Length: 343
Image (cartoon, rainbow, N blue to C red):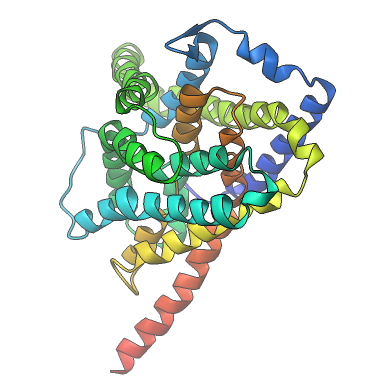
């Protein structure tokens, strides 16, 4: 996803996701055994070897955006921003999912409710995705700061994502061994990051920085987008029988996601109220990397788990809801700025 502007692709992103969902349901309807076929693939550490390779194809383009050469942490709101990403957002997503799915809506899917909560917990704990750059441009905030925040969050995810997920899963869903979470973090985050460092160095040495920036990176970015959409198709194909039997599940699971995004945005934006930085804080504290969340879900529970269904609805809603929050925040910002000028 290009970070240069909120262009045609970003404007139609939700439509593309909706098309992938419908295509996945159609494929699953035609081939109900798609999940069984995927479960038979050879595995290592309980994770399909083929899916590990696929996850790397999805995560490597994400890691290519990490810029360690120009990394700085000199920002007066940095501590509060990290609190928003690694404490407030995970807590809000987890608690809202627990209250709505495990308590209020348990009667609709008693056998699946815990798995749906797990999916939203993994989503809430996930770091910042590339779409963050595009949404920050809508706020008018400093894009160079956004690059730093993105890189910092991806690097912190190696340590914090398994730890935060461990505590929240133990509290609101099913406890998983911490060692397993760190093992899967090694597979889905650390190894792709190391591969990116090596790959980037080789490409630049052989082809030059201009070729890397103008040819290699755009192609890898396109690959990341393709794998992003493909995993959505697969997950909805696997869950098609359940969804077609109970189509209201889509709207039911959308409720905690919508509430969590809005709450996270406005709670996080209070760290720098009535400023462009405040809006950027809101975006940072409400947006999650679907790539990382779905990769961890696949590693923990397998590609056929219902947990992946709940977190896979998030891409359908992130752009319109966060964009709406930005629009509201801009109106508040302009009113607040006008009041300050009068004083």
